[in-house]
Amino acid sequence: MQTNRFKAALKEMRRQDGLWCTMSDPLAAEMMAALGFDWMLFDTEHSPMDAISALPLLQAAAPYPVEPILRPTHLNAPEIKKLLDLGARTLLIPMVEDAEMAAHAVACMTYPPAGIRGVSGMTRATGFGTVAGYHRNASEELCLLVQVESAAALAQIEAIAAVPGVDGIFVGPADLAASLGHPGEPGHPEVRVAVADAIRRIRAAGLPPGILAMDPALHAAALEAGAVFVSGDLDIIALRKGLLAGPGLAAKG
Image (cartoon, rainbow, N blue to C red; front, side, top):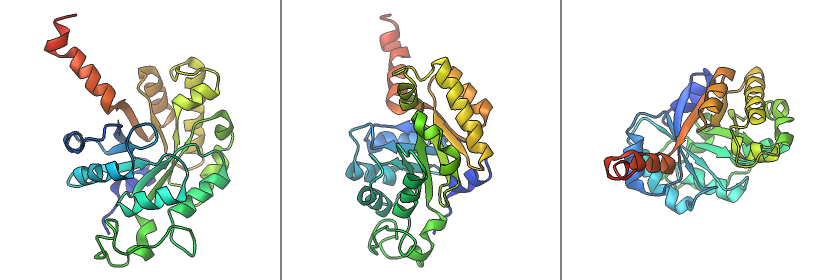
């Protein structure tokens, strides 16, 4: 089995910079995979992407030293099983509210008898049956990130962090902002304070915190608080910004 360098870096609390991806074009994914990011997250929760369209994105990124992360639509064992069988090694599970949900996420990532992941031998994850000992050793290189994104979930950070098998906790500022009464305002001062406090508590609990923060002030506050895996951009927004700044449209402005 190949070493999950992203997981190893998180264990050492080494900063990992990434890119959030919602476009399902393999050619774009291949181009972005070569840019030097430590990780790319392919988001099936808030995009048209699904497991079938995520597979060519995993294949496009495979030749490059970047860790593909997949976010399923929700905490769902069959969906998680499919993404893992497709070869995803790192998953970000959205809307984890408490330790019980975190423990269920761990079980979904783990083969019996410790977990509930279904067993299949002829998958991309197993190298189509060529990776010796995959089923016994898969958990060593699989990385589970759980997402806290509500006021109720923030109150459970320490309990979630104490669940064995959770490798990192991601703070979701967009949903958190809505939960705090500021929908559409992830850069709101109250949200920034809550995010920074959550990140400090996650680190104090011994786990690496993560965040997607396109607001510069929020991004800076997250890094100052100790965020480890961070993203400051989303592919389709970066594309739009680049086109608007290009000579074709800039001249019209």
